[in-house]
Length: 202
Image (cartoon, rainbow, N blue to C red; front, side, top):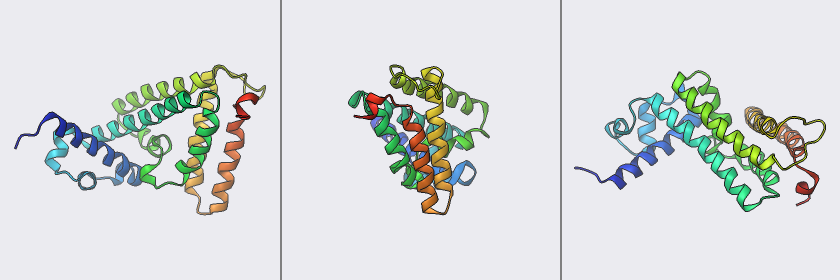
């Protein structure tokens, strides 16, 4: 049976979504092809019809995850030009810290495996991370930085992303819910300091 282009596109998207969830939950080493195909509801043949290898599927899942984060920030900036940062920090340290691992942010959940990945995966990760930094920096460029947060808008964007992803990583790793909340609250206070006084009051 020959499938039309729409069916192929939907199948590919389903495989990418399933791969993203499995890689987040199991890590690259723990996610086998069988687990990926089962989660996507496709055969091994269908999987290899879209990806040459598990590493290519991982690369695509990483790129898709970072794109989703960047597009989410862009949408939030468009909807809330002044208050986007406060909303983003709250969402990231709230829902994205407590949701299931399969739905977690790609930045903290997939980056550790990218460090051990092939050069091509690291290349596309680097390129997409640069775009993510630029998107965040675009929302910080009009803000007057505090004296204890000097540097360009891009420097502060890097700082923000590092704080949030690192904070979520630590908060998810601990077994004590109170400590997890404390980590999130501490990171939130520092991250919120990147807002200008006018923005913080929105």
